[in-house]
Amino acid sequence: MTEKIRVLIADDHAIIRQGLKQILSDTEDLEVTGEADGGVPAVQMIREHQYDVVLMDVSMPDRNGIDSLKMIRKENPRLPVLMLSMHPEEQYAIRALRAGAAGYLSKQGAPEQLVTAIRQVASGKKFVSAAVAEELANSIGEDFDKPAHEKLSDREYQTLCMISSGKTLTQIAEQLNLSVKTVSVYRARLLEKMKLRNNAELTHYGLKHGLVE
Image (tube, rainbow, N blue to C red):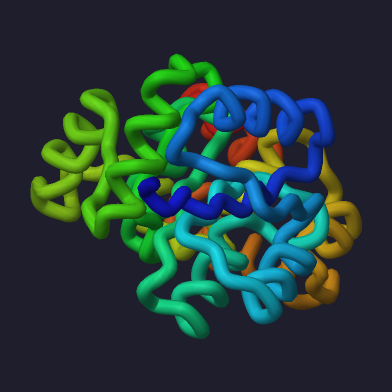
């Protein structure tokens, strides 16, 4: 009998975790052996148990999925992390892959695609959908061809998306577990990089480019 692929699901929504678990329970070679409701407990569980693949949501309240991914990669460079998101693939896929993700999937994708993706990354390969492959091909172009938000750091990008969604600096600081002063620095940097003047212009930009969370 073939050994099952042990999967850890990290998502702060219990219904999503249950749905993913149900999909994988119908597959003979996959087994959910751990569940975490945030990035912090996921990192802790990985320290204490053995997994073959991690399914991780990009947006979690305690620690952003990209930040958790970077920590996991630092401590377990060989453990494949497959990022899941409600956001369109063009928003986070490239950033997730650059941060070390083994693949990126939209939660709206078909269950069969999820199973294929898990098997693929468990075997040591990368998984990207056709849409992400196209984004990757487009991202190879010269830097000046990119939209302004693609030149931001991950933290600056997160701050932009949250301001565009109407969150205050205090709310952003709480969600990212940072000081308000630090978030203010990110805001100042992204305003400078994007040549914008205030939150209203940031929000307008975010809405125009579909960056609202």
